Image 1 (tube, rainbow, N blue to C red):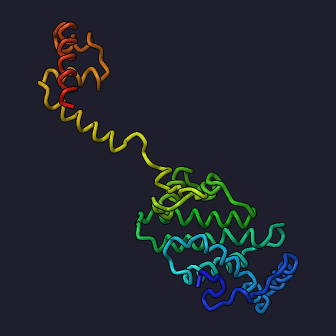
Image 2 (cartoon, rainbow, N blue to C red; image 1 turned 90 degrees about the horizontal axis):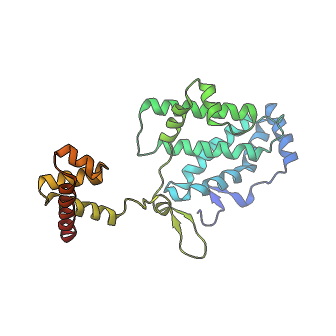
Image 3 (cartoon, helix red, strand yellow; image 1 turned 60 degrees about the vertical axis):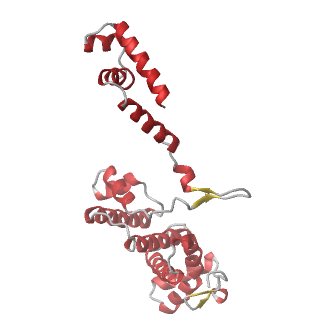
Amino acid sequence: MMASKVEICGVNTSKLPVYKDAEMKEMIEKIKGGDSETRDEFIRGNLRLVLSVIQRFNNRGENPDDLFQVGCIGLIKALDNFDTKHEVRFSTYAVPMIIGEIRRYLRDNNAIRVSRSLRDTAYKALQAKEKLIKLHQKEPTVAEIAKELGLPREDVVLALDSIQDPISLFEPVFHDDGDAIYVMDQVKDTKNTDAKWVEDITLSEAMKKLAPRERHILTMRFFDGKTQMEVAEEIGISQAQVSRLEKNALKYMRKYV
């Protein structure tokens, strides 16, 4: 069904009407006046917007028919809230509304649960965002949303982050003629590698083989960052003795490693 990009939820998109901007403006004026027949025609003529949006969510494993129906709800909301006084194309306004409706649906059906208070804050933030979009015909900043809600910016950021859709580490983020680059390639830890973990475990085991005083000296020298003189003063021996004990301990550890 999705491969042909023709029939979605029983709707043959190849037979849908195509309207120009001027025509849509005239239709919207009629719709605002209560013309229900024009409203139905307008919605049918913009179903391709919904189709173009749901293609972005193909890799979520969701039923395309379900996403299409949810996207249609976003399309209807966009039509109800659209103001022709602002010189903005309907598609420019509608696409974010459709995306928002689909993301809301995916969040509500997400297996990952967050606290009720965070979800409530997030939904209030989304409502405030839609209100500001309708008012100013542009995407508001997080600071503007926080001001509208009377909340600290950090609380709004935390709430919105908590309901973000999870993505797979193996989801491709870039692909050319060569190998694909996946999310895991972008977030992998180059410092705490497997080799580093093995090395740390080996050193830890080697430290356990030392006598308590030698182990204490190396801990102060290489983990606490103290000089040989400071170590000598703390344990009550000469610097020469610290140097000799440190040298012998390191020699033993090299053999063990």
